[in-house]
Image (cartoon, rainbow, N blue to C red; front, side):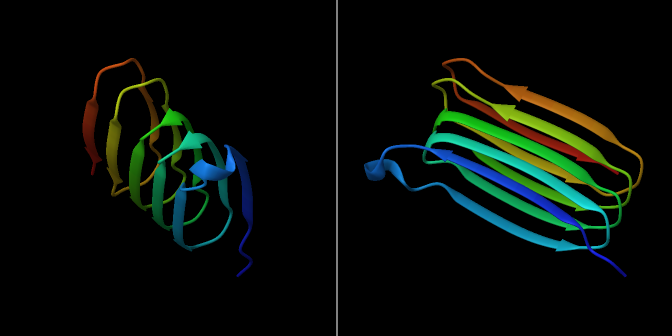
Amino acid sequence: MMKKLLFVICFICSLSYADNEITITQSGSDFDLWVEQVGHNHTLTVNADGDYNTISSSQQDEGHTSVMDIVGEYNTIAVTQKEGGSHQLELDILNDNNSASVLQEGAGSHDATITLD
């Protein structure tokens, strides 16, 4: 079984703000991941188990958290968190063939828990 991991990380922050975190646990084949963290105090955790999953995550400005637990195949996920509020996302996908697009933006704090099963 061949695993493919496309992993691009862009850290654009000053030296005093180098405190972004990325944690990835992955099993399965043909996993594509694109990550952008611009700013500081961002946390991204991805736990993926399954084949042919694609995840795109963009965190901009400061203080955003995404936790994604994916168990299934052929899932496509796009998450964007931006602007001044504290944005928190917990996304659980527990089956196959899903497409999820999440946008959290604006100055207010936003908490989202999404489960697809």
